Length: 124
Image (tube, rainbow, N blue to C red):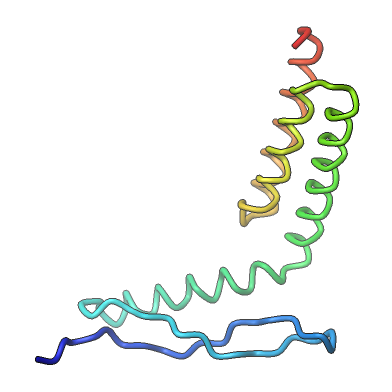
């Protein structure tokens, strides 16, 4: 009994090596067996956008900036024994890790900073 499997394409994924450059290695991307050609092409384009977005200089700079501010908030909250700045810092680190858009990341982190400011002013 043979089972039909979806089409497997080999697409490059970028991995930094010890030489400091980017080395392409093959990674399997399994497509659904009932996808149309347009659906398969759309999935491949979405995959490439995810890979390329991580190497975007705007995304890297925004992630570095907001992650660093989040670490600062965590250190401040821990030393002052205040839970609001600490949790705000953890949330900023999580946003800089999980959000894939530099603009959305910046907007969310500015909202977190404003939220932490107003909660501390309220006495929490």
